Image (cartoon, rainbow, N blue to C red):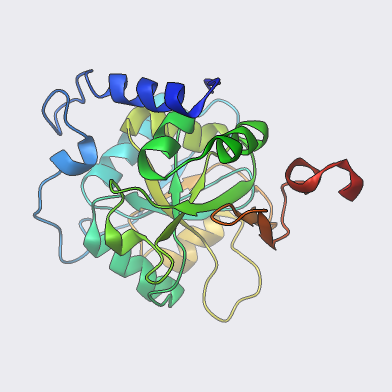
Length: 258
């Protein structure tokens, strides 16, 4: 991951990146999210869920490319992170978002997460102050989810309905890192925790069996555990730890919590 010295430098790097060709999905200089067609799928784009058995350290590039194509076409995938498995979909797909709401039985107040490749992407979709940026830089990539005030670039449907916040994270797992590089843009995400179950699914084969008729692809990167991310609300000062998870608290509140 690239380290930046300031919020302004991070945002400048992201803005500069928009001048590079975004590939076949948009015009040069245009944000891929906004370049995306308004025509959204109304049902599952694939008849059968595809299963990808990935090396957990060095994922196969061809399989990552196939998974990225599923996302681009409106598909919903399950993928491993540095905390537990998650559901992932394209930031512009309304139908995929509604499918996740049905699977998770999530209401309009549920916080979904914007999974980013680096801090520059975080700065594009959230309103960062210097103190927030420094804390993010100290903790990421890693098993943390941070709640931040959403920027104008973030679609309203992805924000908390009342607070207008968005969850962001930069995972340290090689599978999502490689997937994000292939996509060239952030991925919307939600922990793969099914209704009425206290623990998230952690086996790729189990996920395929349980959800093969609900999702479009499973990226099996091995068992990545059942402990979710540590969730920290950075939209208030001082920060508030909303959930203690895999990320150590001393990085948030100081060494006395070791």
